[in-house]
Length: 495
Image (cartoon, rainbow, N blue to C red; front, top):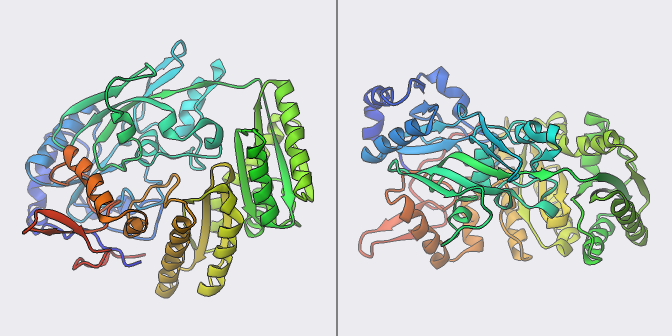
């Protein structure tokens, strides 16, 4: 994949000192020196880099509104950024943009146990929500592997999921309301503590919109009462096909686990070496199934899952007998990405979703691609909802390997679409999958989506160059046409 971003506006670049001076009128937190900008030149994708024109760190909604209004009036691009842990290049800066970091919006504003919700600023980390309410027996359900670091605002932008998305849904199912600032400075409040809103589902429109429609400055999220009992079971199989069949059978029997994850052998070994979670090393696939509910319900469901696993030729099983043991099972899975960092200089973590019954088929195809490109790959899946995360390992010191890794990832995602899946389950499109949007949508489909963006951002100033293929405007027709990434724009620098 050759990556392009919109051509920089030279007039904006020439006026950097004036723009920085003006931004200082709205907030005292403006960064513009090269060394100050360096931490913001990439994100969790960590493949491409680009310093922004300047970084602003507003502290309240008024500052956000004034900065966006100024940028709108002077046609300055703005890229919103949360914790920078995203894995699709969604917060990658542009050379002529103001990068708006929401890190100072880091307070929980209200804990409302009567309405079972928390009002929070977007810079609060995902895990901090649970930590703030767990003393009252509550928790926040979405739990990405990066929940220790990723922010609620970023979760909203990407519609993040996690290992418990199967039963409790992704971010969109757990956010009740937001305060959003549009590019012209308009402040909107959508939803709130109530469960239903009148009119169009604008809240749904903003969930997963990747910073293209507005900047979130506040969110009201749903919290849940902790279940009476929770247990997990590790199940090993001698083939990925048997593990996939077990997943399908569990769901078809009407069992809805709180979480259900698969790891293949390369990842099992890497993770066990790194996290010492007690995983068996002699299996080809490892399934983690978590059941929650009443004590009697959990006991019965665990036994049913084990019976189904036996029917699918399981060669190993171990059920947790304490909460500490259960957390140890998950410690391994949540350390999977870090474990790959130990065995490879670099990796790209892909993110596609497929029908559950295609798991074995897709994994077999990924293994074929691994041989074709001569690159190692380790796989983990949110198996219950078909969200897969192949980790393609390479060495960025070799430009040829990076190109091969990009092509490898693109081929995986194309195959996901071919078998009835989609390009992203939770990481978003960003720049990573942008040129593949034409695999899923035709020109009319994308025109409709761009029309929605234009309703909120008619100048295309918010996070341009993300999600949709680089576009070429046809003056004669007044329409935007897609050229599948073949444009005049220069390549973005790579690490």
